[in-house]
Amino acid sequence: MKAIGLLSGGLDSILAIKVLQEQGLEIEALNFHTLFCSCTPKGSSCSAAASAAKTLGVPLKVIATSDEFLEVVRRPKHGYGRNMNPCLDCRILKFSKAREYMLERGASFIFTGDVLGERPMSQNMEAMKLIERESGLAGLILRPLCAKLMEPTIPEINGWVDREKLLNIQGRSRKPQIAMAKDYGINDYPCPAGGCKLTEPNFANRLRDLMQHMPDFTKNDVQLLMTGRHFRLSGSTKAVMGRDANDNLKIMAYLKEGDIVMAVIDISGPTTLLRGADAEAWVEKAAIMTASFSKADGQDITVRISVTGGGRKEPVEMSVKPVSREMFDEVMLHQ
Ligand code: SF4
View (tube, rainbow, N blue to C red):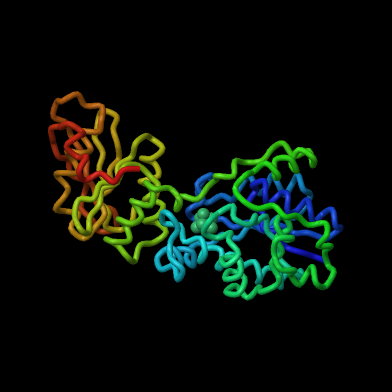
């Protein structure tokens, strides 16, 4: 009997696999990578999941969700959690994908490391049932760590797994899981708080601002949201400024046709990108900002400005005087 285990790399998902391995099931692991995963470099998959799969001796498939996930973030049918995290819709999307993968691999059911009541939005009984129904997996999601607190699932009813050997963990205390990890000799697992930017209040503020001013935002806009300092200059235009050399490189990598980009010359300082319908009107202000966040110590300084895209003019240079950075506090979107 084959089952697909959702593996985040966190302790609960590792323990769920351990529990079912002990029952002799053939297990394949599935991990989801989204644009908003904050503990992995962008574009790469989850190293915690990869190392857990290796330790557990199970094959791992990573599914990257992007466009569909952006749609969920824009318009979640079931709303947001405390910040901009649409956990119910996110999980419905992931389970729908998991169902497709289950069928593709000839597996009979899905299981997870969910613990009843551990996360208020997506791990209460009602939410779990809703997720099952809407992902087409009613009765086919087993939660080995809290199964005894729930109605028997098809794998239990059909005897594919022994319900007596499943557990009844609930609540936010991690003590039972930590004790189990000790029994299994698992010492290396990531912190459970891990990695979704949508749950971070400051990131949520930036995202709300983006959604309000640019409802048709793209993956590129979200990537930019995670980079540097952001300044809302008008209803349509924003400046994004690197905090360090790494941010400056990322900003250059995310440039799109029509973006205006600028940097001071001769001394070190930020790269600043201006994006929006009236960006040209904000060039001087952005140049002053760029100079003000550079290493200049009050003297006039030259900023080189260019427009991205074919057929554009040559870069121009503008001499500006730096001012106190606090002057821009009002328009800064804090992160
Ligand atoms: S915290 Fe983020 S990744 Fe996790 S379920 Fe919620 S929205 Fe999805």
